[in-house]
Length: 495
Image (tube, rainbow, N blue to C red; front, side, top):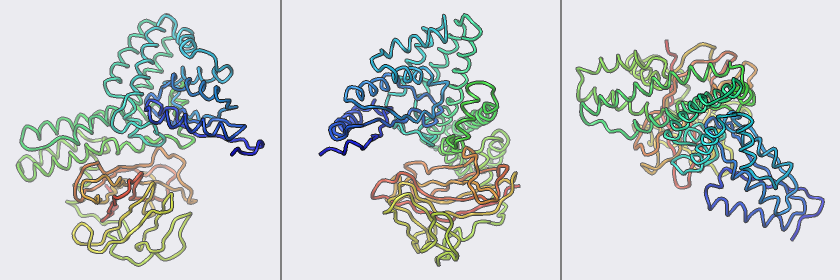
């Protein structure tokens, strides 16, 4: 069967995933079948996803354009929300191929490098070739769909490729034969540094997540790595903040992506979740095995970890345990199981939801449950299963500049499975609209493989323009057969 000739059809695809042979075969087969059925067929693709690490794949891009042209596709719409300092050669080649799909992509790239970088063209070509190979290499958490997923961006290239790339850019800068070429190389270098901070902190956090503390030596090693992660995280936050004010392509790119709500730097706690878990294990080990040294370790974490949000979250959590400030969350233990009164906001639901809470899901089939006797200490818990994106929701009034610690306990079923539990905080204005700066939202995910009940902790400062804090324990991308349990959601005002 064929569609009517007055139907103009777009078929979506992510050519960035074509480094996975099975994805490429499936995409091409699907396109062939639609080309048989639709007289007017065009392509829809995604070249950017606001990925802050190099998402560079010009040869896959060119292969897709030429393949589509060979099947008679008539046009193309591409979302180019791209980190342009890292992808400019690919985007320029793409624009040229749109006019003439027969052009050779290597010739186009070579022309770009010569005209932009002069005498340093050969080294810049080596740099971009390295970034392309790195992006197309499989590694954990690297899947190609980076949109608003900072952890996926941090896994886009390896720490080794980051280090080698920095070396090539430094060499290219020395080789540059004009101020203009040198400045262009510096912008590429600084943008790699911007994304590199995510790559570095995620790699360090993963090392800490895998570490075991069993004696004084391993405890000291964990403390050293924690303080190194804190140092890099502080440096990153300062650099990211300053980069937004730059008067160059990097600054313009960051401001543009921020304005459309695509920056996800507020997810930095996800990158450091392994570090936070390791810090809690370290404190627990000293409390049990070396109590005489515990105060000294805590003092070092507080003084040398100041300014690193993941360690401030841990020290804030310990302060809460010691000082017992009032918990501002409403029915955070879910013991009041009767549904919330009043109409639900937006497309949220309050029916069959514990008092004080709403719930939301992106799709039908998600199951929300209230489970008596299944909480941390035989108390009530809530649970989510079958959720692509699903959350429980509570709004709390706040003022700009206030500091809070938000925490909840999570458990995976079956034990050891990854039920994709997370804790997120968004902000709303006094008019009830979502705060325009989505990059200020905070989110942390439960580390995969943790067993039993584990805390998720966020430390945050309320931004200007915010009047409400929206607390959301939930799940993303859940597999079938798993369930995430939540208990004891708590919110504390920090001094």
